[in-house]
Length: 376
Ligand SMILES: Nc1nc2c(c(=O)[nH]1)N[C@H]1C(S)=C(S)[C@@H](COP(=O)(O)O)O[C@H]1N2
Ligand SMILES: [Mo]
Image (cartoon, rainbow, N blue to C red; front, top):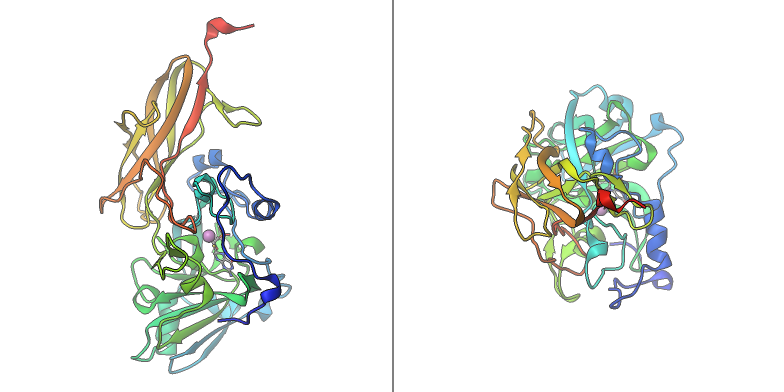
């Protein structure tokens, strides 16, 4: 792991009961924006509306032609590839929904102090690149290999540890054919934007965001499990800080509503005129295909099945769901709940861990339906 820099060391901590967001959380929130939920109307998120999360700084890549990707470690031949060389390999395009593992964190109590996501750390893009398996085949992975470590060109300090952003995948995930892990150079048919990893990033369908290493410059095959900061300190599910914890891996099921009606500027409460309303949204799971979505319009007291659109061949993308509702004057709380083929579903009570990871508590959308008789 990296050098200790005690001068800027800060432990991970939890906000005290009732403590508002601090300026440190605000600084992260202004850098790392979420998906405006109304943009879930698009099957593929338009550029600029996809959520963004960057731990350190976005690297300034002046000359894409000079970028090099090194494949090394427990391999027979070290590869050094330019972005132009990568474009000569067979290209694969996959529509993938990415979600940050910390999505939902700011709604937890007590609140883990970090990037304060509500529920909007999600987006869907068409990623084009080279299957990682082809590069590993060409390099010739040694028989004692266990992990593949991915290094980004960004550098920073986290909890007192100076480091490059690094994450690993087990060899079987890295060399899988379905889903194929991609070394991607295009997003929605265009070169990667700077904030999404220009010029190269990893795309691991079904896994939470931390695995999708941006500004990818190194791939190292190792014969021992990788124990870097983002693997063994961050991104672990723990209730107590002393626990080793379980690693964060694939995305738990979640359904979100496209906000109905129109919003109040400050509270974001939705105003919905009385009458028929089409409730609709998106649902996804990285663990198994979503099999059903249920909707509640009474704060979770009763649930009714929604119509779930087919995946149209895009297993790793969110899917549209909808259900008709007849809004009557008064206050309502709307929710949607996804269940996948493996029986994973969304909890109605908050699941809690110190990092606020893999938190898929059902969304609650307060709605006010005005009485037409009350016009002043
Ligand atoms: N090099 C690098 N890769 C990274 C990160 C980072 O800080 N540095 N953040 C990760 C996290 S936590 C998330 S959620 C996703 C976000 O990807 P996006 O910004 O393209 O949506 O990138 C991942 N890849
Ligand atoms: Mo993330």
